[in-house]
Structures are given as C-alpha cells and as structure tokens.
View (tube, rainbow, N blue to C red):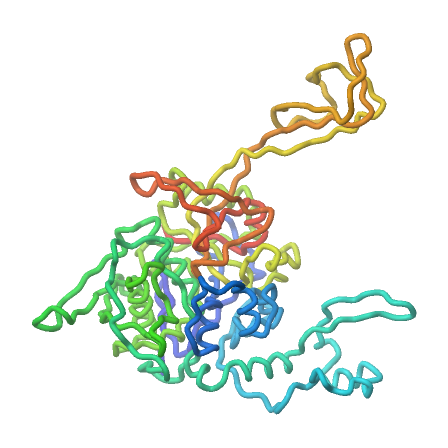
Amino acid sequence: MTTIKHSSASRTASRTAAPKPTIARKSTTKRTRTKEHAAPLADIGVPNPYALAEVVARRHIDWASVSNPRALLEEIFQTPYGDLFDPANGSPLYIGQHLRADGSVVRTRPSPTKNSKPLLARDDDLQSIHNLAQLTERLGAARLADIPVRNVLAARNGLQIQLGETIAERDFRWEKMFDKGILDILFPERAGYHPDGFTWQDAGRFYNETAEFSDPVQGAVGDCYFIAALSSVAWSMPFVIADQTRATGADNELFKHQIGFHGASGLEHVEVTDRVLVNGWGGVDFCSSKEAGEIWPAVYEKAYAKWRLDEASDFPAIPSIAGGDPSIACAQITGLADYRNWHQFFSASDILQLVKNHTTNGRTTTPMIAWTYGTAAEGDQGDIAYREATVVAGHAYSVLGWLTRREFYFERFDLSGITIPQYLPTDWPVPDPGPLHFADVGSAPRFMNGSFAMSDTLAGARSRNVDYVVLRNPWGSTAGTGASVAGGGHQAIDVDWWRTIPLGADGVFAMEINAYHRYFAGTGGAH
C-alpha cells in the first residue's frame, strides 16, 4: 500500500498507510498568537480547470484562441462559471472531495451511482408532483432538508422557489462527465503510473533561462499547495531551485536530476529523469512551465510525488499527492521552519504586519503562501461570495509581497441653506481623514458679505493610503477581480534589481488588506 510523507522541518515526519492525511482545517481549540506552530494544518487542493477540461474533453484546447473561455468551461463542466470555484455549488473541480462539518477534507475515488438517467429530467411530466414529499422522492433526496434552495420570491398566494441540485443529481452528472477512463487518470489505484492516453517523454529543457515565480503552472492535479509553494520559493529564494544532474549514458543524452526535500531525516534526495507525462495530443496536463519547452516545474512535481509517495520507479502516481498544507510544502522545499496564521484569530492589521515582516522593498524574502476556506460559507462573515471576487475555495496562492496605493475618494457635504465661509475652518464638524485637495460647489455660489451660500453640496476630494497583498494563482490565470483588487503594476526589487509585475496577468493580483483578510482563511509559509 502506498505511503506518503506530509511533514515539516519543525516536526517529525509522519508515514501512514492512508492515501492522504485528513487534517482539520478549523478547530475549536483555542490558539494563541505566540504559538504559530500550534495552529492546525491546512488541507488544500483543487485542480486547474483549464487543464482538467482538456482531460475531460480528451483534446487539446488552445485557450488563447478561444473567444469565450468561460463559456467553453461551462459547456465542458456543465456548470455555470460562477459556480466552479466552490464545492457547495456542485463544482466538478472538487470531485472526490468530501468537506466535513468540522472543515476536514476526505478524498476518495467516486463510486458509480445506480441511476440510469437523471432523477428529474427536463422533459419529465412535472404535473404529477403535487406536494413536497413527492418532489423529495423524485429528486432522490432522503429528506426535504437535503434539497438546496437557491432563490425564493414572493408571489400572489404563494412562493416561487428555485431549487438547486441534489447530491444524487450531482453524482449522476459527474458520472457522465468522469467515466472510468478519466477516473483512472485522476484517481490511480496502483503504483507505477501509466494512464491510458499518456506517455512519459522528454518534453524539453530543464531551464530556458532560470527559475522564475511565473514559470510553474498547475495542471489537472489538486496539488496547488505544492505549486504555489514552488512559485513562492522561486520568487523569494531563487537559488534554492537548482539543477543537479548526473549522466546515465556515454553520450550524455541520458541523465538524472537529483532533487532534495526536507523530511524527518533532514535533507532527503530523490533522482528522476527528464521524462514527464505527455498526453495523446502532445500537451502536458500536469504541472508545466509558462515558458514553452521548459520542464523544471514538471520535474519538481514528479520528484515531489516520488518522494512523498515513496515510489521506487520513475513513474510516480502524481494525482495521489492531491491535498496538502502549503506551509509544509514551503518547508519541505527549503528546509526552513513552517508557520501558519489563521485569519479568524488575527485582525487585518495583524496579517498585514505579518506580510510586511517577511518583505523587503515590496518582495517577500522567505516563501509565503495563503489559502482559502474549503467553501465560502466557512468564512467568519458567512457567505463571502467567492464568485464575486473570482477567488477559489480550498485553494492555495503564492504571496509575493505587498504594496500601498495613495488613492483619492470624494466626500460630499449637504450644505443646503447653510452659509459658510470661503474656506473650511479647522473646526469643521466632519472628521478629517486626510488633506482636502479641492472643493467644488454643486450650484453657482451666492456671495453675501464675504461669504457665500449654496443650495446644493460641497464635494471634497481626499486621499488616503490603501494597503494591498500581492498574490499569484498557481493556475497562471484566474486572478482575483472586483472593487477590492488594484490595477496597474507592482514594483518590487528582485534580489538586486527593480522589476514591475503586471497585475491581472498570469494569475497575479493585488487585493486590499481587509478583503484579503475576509476572503482568505490563512497566511503562512516558511522562515
């Protein structure tokens, strides 16, 4: 039976016979702010929808040339785009994941259902349903409480109710989408991984130039915790990513890479070849590099899977490493001590200071990561609406640093019928949050004895500093959106030179600290 490693530099490595450790994401145990290591581990993992869509569709998709990628994702996954990023919405990205009430995650291979057709087909005669008991039976639910309600509208002499999908309906939809062949790819049942339609090939060079934070792009495996950590290490400690090789043939065309990870026995090395999994149409559905022809992220993913699964061969079952703690992954790559701060126990200013403490000139100097709640409903604010900010539930992100923007906003004072002086006195009754840059009147002033009267409003433009946390989605796409996200670029010093990182591209975005504190469950890393 497969054993896995899920350890850190700060604690003894555990080797269990379980396919993956089940670790509580949230706990009722009181945690002190001075004992970061006492915080429960995260258990994060959701695949890249663009890579998974190619596996499901069994064909290459040139996403750059697709006119409406969101619509194509909806068609392939039979799910509205806004519902893809939360398991509570029946998203197929979370297939095989079961989120318990205490926040823990169990990952198992789905079993076939006994239904030969949808329980409530669109062409069914709904006239035969006369009460909720009959509806419950038709939907395959054990009780009425198992039927989700999406919307309720008041109507004359009654209610109009929009019902959601039951678990039975969802399982039927997933079974048609993920047949046995695809499940064999995503949920391998034996060591020595050779999925149908894939071959292990040498697909390029280890580096094109060097390791960069934007290189790792997650694939169809739910190992975002590791890919985000890999990106964070490449950004904050680039010398850690190294290519150590040895020849295995006289012509030097065959060689192996030696990659080290830190476990219970200290630094442990594994050797892997250049061969990575390539699909039938010549693409890579697992971890890849943003730069064409470069394979170092794929080799690192393969080496990590071989190490974590204790795989003897050169063909580890990479999908079996789905789910893990991103802080521990940072420690395993670097040898530093892991830490994690769950946002529910800290204020937004505390978390901002944490990021600042690990940052110099806008750039993190040790690998930092962030992770979201297993579902938006877990947040302290209740439903925090991940769909509105394009934030993914149960997902890990790289933390690249922080930035401050001086932003203007307008205040309007109702001055109807009030005579005021030509300038605002220091005892103006409204609290002053910043310097008043200009004032304008909503109607022509009427001068009276050195003062003027107006019948409308006074508008003042003030400025304030707004702090943002800079993040990267390991998918290399799907950056956060909404009013709390900044545009433009992030200027940071990359070891010894200044660079500007475009925001909104390659999965990089900057989120205002209060929104970040609300949307994300925790911040951690290794130091």
